[in-house]
Length: 85
Image (tube, rainbow, N blue to C red; front, side, top):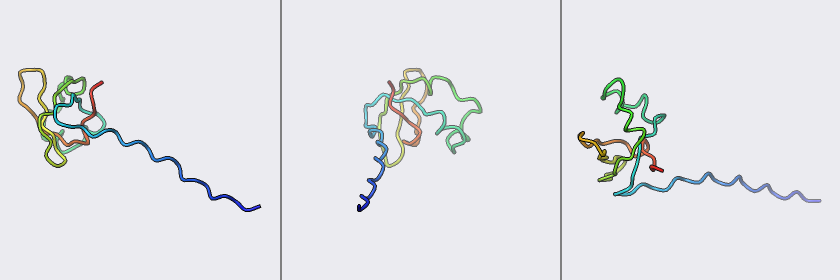
């Protein structure tokens, strides 16, 4: 009997791309140890990990996030953001 070639494993689903207006939060694992974390406070505020923040602008691999607090907007790498749920 001839062997049938094994089918490749199903590709992992890529998370949906975040777009302007999306509600987001920061992925702690992706943020810690990054250049952005090194340029910020030693202890980042909890609200960035809890969310939600609104994605205002996407330019290349960076997004500008506005938090629902009286704090300045921030630019973060898109791979550090995840959809708020």
